[in-house]
Amino acid sequence: MRTRFAPSPTGRLHLGHVFSALTAWEIAQEAGGEFLLRIEDADAARCRSEFEAAIRDDLAWLGIAWPEPALRQSERLPRYAAMLERLTGMGLTYPCRCTRADIRAGLSAPQEGAAAVVYPGTCRGRLLADVGASEAVRLNLDRALEQVTAEALGFEETGPAHRGWHRLDAGLLGGRIGDVVLGRKDIGTAAYHLAVVVDDAEQGVTDVVRGEDLWEATPLHRLLQALLGLPTPVYHHHRLIRDAEGRRLAKRDDARAIARYREDGLTAAQVRALVGL
Image (cartoon, rainbow, N blue to C red):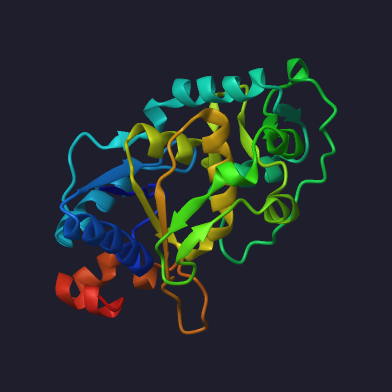
């Protein structure tokens, strides 16, 4: 068994990260497996070396260990570009020149509470040879679904809310995800959805442990795995740590950053207890 924790170094770790990292760590430990740290730093404009150093320090303080060197997405851009080219060679992508805000949003992991805006296919008729500077490359979902069958896209979920065997829900893909951004052609930046399935496969991750907010992205990830001939991990979507108003914690919640609790003198065991572990 091999699990992973994959933070982006764009801020300090908070209690939600503690729960996710410890859940992945303990699942691996109980099975005699391995826990990996992955640094998702492909977004050079937002990532900071000081945040990466703080992430490593906080995880070590919690008693979590991992083999080095940790995978860094910023060092793998050519690999993502090659996988994007494979999908393009299959006729499954097209360029998109819609708003830069939409394109930027597509490059990151989906966030709970963000409006689910399904791309209407405005640029679907364009040829990839026409891609311009700062434009996105999108997946043509309808064509992609024609390449696979629902029977071939099953996946196992071990998390508490969705435990069991699942098949691809094409309606979910089309109605809530649509033609997602896979990358930026001009700078070779991979979007979250493409990078995460490539990295999980090439790191040999057998069990993907992540928050419930990413549950609806799983059918898309399973589709990309099938298209690219990648192995399918077991998925485990865990509960989210929320604030007093029921909102999912975010990196802007500095009051709940692990560093604050450490400065206040709490022990690692006390921080674990705050998230119910």
